[in-house]
Structure formats: structure tokens, C-alpha cells
Amino acid sequence: MADKVYENLIGGRWVGGSDFNENRNPSNVEDLIGLYARASTDDVGQAVVAAKEALKSWSMISPQVRADLLERVGNIIMTRKEELGLLLAREEGKTIAEGIGETVRAAQVFKFFSGEALRNAGDVLASVRPDVDVDVTREPVGVVGLITPWNFPIAIPAWKIAPALCYGNTVVFKPADLTPGCGHALAEILAEAGCPAGVFNLVMGRGSVVGNAMLAHPDINAISFTGSVPVGRGIAVEAAKGLKKVQLEMGGKNPMVVMDDADLDIAVGACLNGAFFSTGQRCTASSRLIVQSGIHDAFVEKLQAAMSGLVVGDACDLATQIGPVVSAAQMASNLDYVALAAHEGAEVFGGEQVNGKTEGFYQRPALFVNAHNQMRVCREEIFGPCASVIKVSDFDEALMLSNDTEFGLSAGICTASLKYAREFKRRSEVGMVMVNLPTAGVDYHVPFGGRKGSSYGSREQGRYAAEFYTTVKTAYSFAG
Image 1 (cartoon, rainbow, N blue to C red):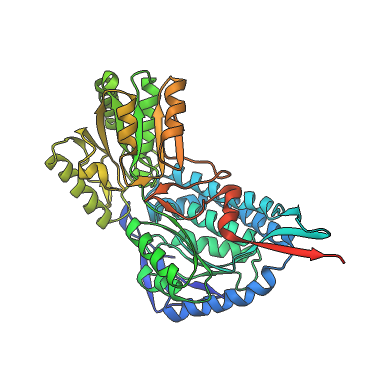
Image 2: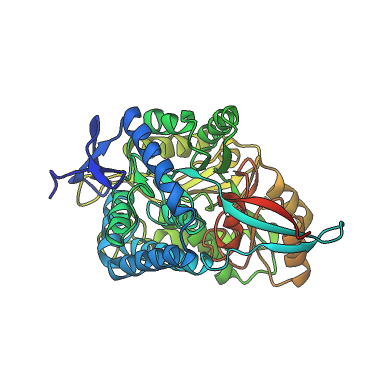
């Protein structure tokens, strides 16, 4: 029911908050999804107390128990994928297909870490001293605070919660205030799957209240955050004061290089997907299209034609290919950048706000042609369906411009040349490189993360998640 208040989960109990948040559908602002309780600073404190108490048993429990819990969670998510995909589409604005796809990914992440719970390996080494044995083991970090963004409201929580629980940590979780519905649904599923009281705690609300309380609490041992660069930098500073382990995934200004020898259809398809699908609201989106001069005009013409054919509309309409922007504030920011691109001298194609069948935040994808890499629209993360086209003469110029950014998350190249592909993979100053594929779209069993201003700390996802969610202990034994 629309007037239901969805509560926080603290110590195994559903509790209200100091206030509540109206969660509305960006495709139709008249559609009230629900009221979500906002936690207070005291609520966060109670959640941490519960997590710290639960840590005593959860950190020592059989890995089979943790594996079984995560497997059950993955199975429940999979059986409810259509329902959860619809919820995701309603609150975030992804299309139904993208919402279901993201939900399936969340289930896969939980099931992957179910297996990893039984593979928490260590080392047995020979000591340099006679009759001494050395064991190196991985143990949980402790109470982990997880802060997630609005753009992937079920997948990103999954890839933080699952490894945290897998390795024996307990969790205090804050989903984005803009999209709390999927986070709350995950909390319900964890409870249904039999997660012990206090092992997982949900505290919804504003970052200025809940996030700050998590950072300030001395009994939270580690913080994993995905979000904007300014907030991430602030978290790093505050976490250092409390000597908390910290993991940050932040922004991107990702390049896609298109060489003259590229397959034009593959290049256009990769750029269309990477730049505009999910309404461009992905940190891995292709926001700078760096195109060699020989293919430039044909590429722009074909990309513009493909953009013109995209159906912009209600995320819950099966015909829609590009859903709404997530909020009025994001829409205003996007439109400001479209105007800025024209002011800076780019030729703007698309980008206008459009009317839908219902009142929502609809925008056509925007292409900024004849751009150069010093324009603000080519330097700053827009986080909307906007991409710049930058013409270059050769591979060396393309590579130089690709790396000429404060960010370093993802980069791509479309080429038929093994030499260009090899050199681009080796010399790109990023954490992830794609060849003839969109810069957005990653697998769940391999590491995710970047360099420079995009990421800080160890990688997320796959077996590399152990680097953040565990700490290493070295034990020496002398048998006598």
C-alpha cells in the first residue's frame, strides 16, 4: 500500500525513525511507492551495538552456516526477480528489462559469495627458525558500515553485503535516501532467509545524519562507500580520524576510443549502450567518445540516427528503452550541462527535456559534437544521458586524451587491430578496459574498481573482495 511506512531493521526488530521519506516514481511523480522511515543518530548507535554483539558469534560460526544463508538469499531474490525488477524500475527509473537484469545480478552475487564462504584460504609457510610453523589466516574486519548510491539500488548493496557476511563481518547498511525501496526489500529477504538478529542492520535516511553517525561511531571498523567524489573524499578524511578501514568507489569520465579500422556497427552499438542506457546514470558510462578523423563523420551520423530511434518514456512501459532521469535535481543539472556544452562551442544534438504520458523527468540523450577535452562537459562527471565526441588524428593522440582526466575507472576501444587493443589495455590509466565492448557492463566474479579520483582502497567483487572484508593474521607455533 502506498501509505505503508517501511521501517528500519535494528537488532532483528523493525523499528520506526525520527521522520519518513516519500519514495516517488521518477516516471510518474504522482506514484507514491511508500514512506520509508529515516533513522536517527541514536538508531545508528543501536544498530552498531547490535552488530557488535552479533559479531561475537557470527565471526566464529561455521562457514557452512554463512554459505547456506547467502545461498537462500540468492534463491529468494531470483524467485522474486520480476517483482523486485518492477520495484527498481518504479523507484530509480531503469527500464523493466534493466531492473530485472540488475536483480538477477544481485542474486548471482549472493550465490557466488555462498561458495566463497567455504574458500576463505590462508597459507602455511616454513619458518626461518627450526621447528617453528607459520600460519597466515584471514579473519573478519568486524562491524562494517555500507553506504550505497541510488543508481544501482539492489546490485551495489548486494556486492557489498554478500562479501561482508561471507567473511564473518556484521553489517550496518544505509541505502541511498533517494531509492530506499530495494535496500529495504533486501533487508526483508535477509530476515526471511534466517539472518541472525544483529548480523545485518538497515538504517535508512540522509547521509548528513545516518552516514555521519556511522563515520563517527568508534565501533564501526570499516566503511565501504559508493557515490560522488566530494562525499567520498570527505569520508576518507573522517574515516582516517577513527583509523577505520575505508573503500571508496566514486566517479568517472570514461573514454571510448573509436579507431578508423573499427567495425562501425560494433562501435555505434557499444557507444549507444555505454553512453545512454540506464539513462547514462552509471559511473562506468562512456561520456567521452574519442573518434579518429577518418571514421568520425560516418560514426557521428550513424550514432545520431540510432539515438533518434531510442524510445524515451515510462520505465514500466515495455516499449521504453531510455527511462527517466532519477529526480528533478538531476534533470536540472543535466539540462545545465547541455546549455553549457553549447556555450562552450560544441554542436548539441538532442538533450532536451520531453513530456511523457505522466509527469516525470524525461530527457532525450544528448551528443556534444566538435568538443575538445578541455571543455567542462569533457572534464566533469555529468551522470546523465550526455556524451561528447572528440576528434583525433591517430592512436597516440587518442590514448593521450583518454588518460587526460582526473578519473580512472573504465576505458574502451573499438578497433580491429590487435596492436592497438594490446597497447590500449597496457597503457590506459584505469582499473577496467573494454575492447569492442561498452565501457559499462561488468561481470560479478572479477574485480571492479578504478584508479586516480575514481577509487580508493581495495577492489570490490569477486575473490578480491576479501582484501577489504578481511584482515590478515600471522600465527607462529613451536612444538618443543
